[in-house]
Image 1 (cartoon, one colour):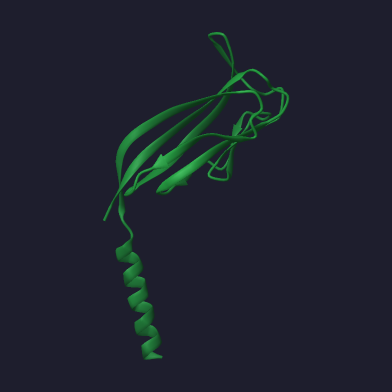
Image 2 (tube, helix red, strand yellow; image 1 turned 45 degrees about the horizontal axis):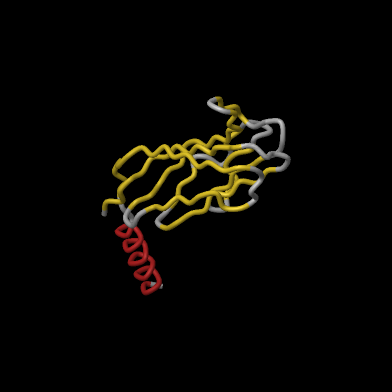
Length: 131
């Protein structure tokens, strides 16, 4: 029993020491443009080593000339890193905030019945992971 308790204490102390603090680095506002109904990757978000990204907001707009309008007349969804984060029909962000760790994460738009220019906007906060 003493060995089991000792192992548990060691594992807990290792997990506590492995965690870091977050330090604000920058605000990131990105736009990704595409035409039509892609149902595939329209862009990527790359989170550098030693950082995490907190996605705060996502928008999906239809572009007509110099004007932009929310897409709500047809089904459309934005997925980041495999997580659905925006549905156009209800004009709602879902599963936000979304935290992304190091690596490259795909942005996928699924939509039907749209052949015009479109734009996805992503607002995020980048943090440094400080040991």
